Length: 200
Image 1 (cartoon, rainbow, N blue to C red):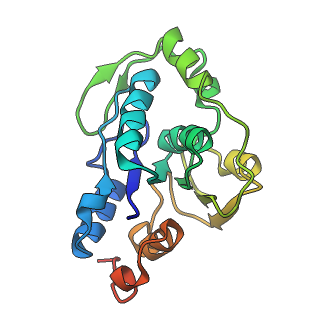
Image 2 (image 1 turned 120 degrees about the vertical axis):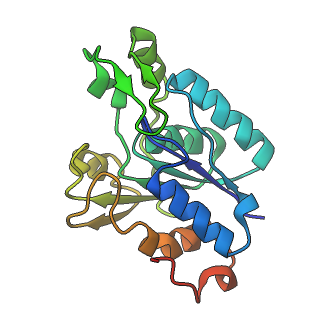
């Protein structure tokens, strides 16, 4: 039975738009129990421990990672041989945070935290070779991502199945309309989603 593990991004949560759209769609298909939506700790080491525990119990879930969640998903897919769909993924986020000592606030919970050297080291430790199998790794990018330069991910994941859309934003505009493509990649039974419009 195919299961999906959704991995949210930095300062995000299971209450994010994409996570909720995915949850709603799987509710409509009657398979919400196949979706894992963890609320991840801001410390990478603890977040990965959470994800590792879910993977251990879920078998071979398909990973769907957004932004920093895409970085986590890349590491976990490499480590466990899992399929991964990455949405505007972060590439080498430890370099983006280097020298940043500003307070961060989770958009959904209001939790505040301060990046530390331990945080950066934990992120750096998760870097793995770029995926090479387009059957196992699909990457969705939008060119108007206001947070990350999509070209970095386009280059890093160049051996994967790239899906690049002009415009959009970091949250990936039109995600709900693309859910059938996500379900097809995951290998969910075609009969569950083929006649459903998820855009509303």
